[in-house]
Amino acid sequence: MFCGDIRNNMSYALMYGAAKTGMHMVALGPKELAPDPAVLAAAREAAKLTGATIEVTDNVDEAVKGADVIYTDVWASMGEEDQIPARVKLLTPFKVTMEMIQKTGNADVKFLHCLPAFHDFETKLAKEMKAQGHDIREVTDEVFRSRHSVVFDEAENRMHTIKAVMVATIG
Image (cartoon, rainbow, N blue to C red; front, side, top):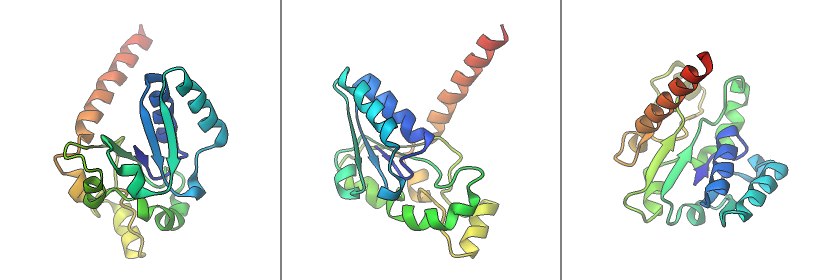
């Protein structure tokens, strides 16, 4: 399950990946940030070949029930800092918290994030936004540092993939 801004590159990549591998994928986020209808249609068309299902919802309780993985990303990408206040308002109900983890009913649910993540207030931007009344954390520190979190294993796997691509492209 991917939650947050479900019309961003990570959500789309997961939709296509799930469609091509026969997985059930749920995109959880506000209706205002719904996926592009053309992208969703293409992912669902690809899903027909593998038996995958791609769902879109704004209902947290329904979306997380039975989830094996909860994936999220930052709420405002680089260059979108001016949109942070509006994004915080839209996306706070979709913040990954321990309560959300527990609602899955899966004691072994995993948390993923492509990093970097706002999970505490130790960065300059998080501190500045907090001072202005905006909590930009897409995941709580409790979840980020929990046994459910495999974000650093994910990052390590990505690092090796990137190194392999670099070797392959430099000849």
